Image (cartoon, helix red, strand yellow):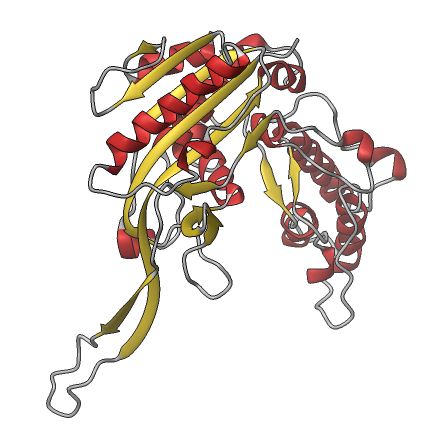
Length: 360
């Protein structure tokens, strides 16, 4: 049986633009017949895995990198900078990058640009170090790599972010990694209306003697919402992805939980300072089949006490599922900054206590 860890978070954001669509406006989705504010799972995962919180918790050494620029950044540029001919560097970069995916190969693009692979790919710290070691040898000997030296992909020594969020290599499926963590798009629990901010910028050297107008005018959308975020982790698959390392698995779970509760997406931060911690967290552990509690907000919340009402609805729906299906989790932990008592049979407490619960 698989042990699942599920996180249900409620996080409130003041007016902001955390995650933009192709027009620059905040992303939305319709649910329960109304438009809701939305933050995509891709935006959330990137904010968490690249955050200082996540990196510090894992001491930086277990976090990989996601990039298309293996050929240019890791091979071509270092070789050319070290005095290797551009022709040799280009051939070496194409061979090495080609191990991780098909090259871009656009007819009108500069040759250096065509050393990038078509899609971003996750590489572990170990794989990155293997590339760097090979490139150092090629620089010393001023040559291209031999075929026997191009065995750079590894199933073992995976980075924690790859173990959590997976990797897909179309050309090398044997090195794919099944994601141990699933993240839903965060959705506002109430209906939303996107507003527009018209703004101007003044030139500091404009003394109004010749021109009293603004130096720049612009417009950007914003909105506010209380978001419900759902995360589901297969602890057993995470442990398998990390080579059976129990200590690293526990640290990874705690790092993810802390990041999810305290790290905000980076969209328009300088304009809105949209930093927020989760106001409520319900963590569930057990072998039961996971289920989201998003249905608690199918009817949009209305009124002034949205957080209190959202907490009540999420716990009532949790109890409803337990009554209908039997206990949907073996153990639960609740963090509630409002300080109210939980309707659930659950431990309650602070973030450090929650992280200890997740680690166990």
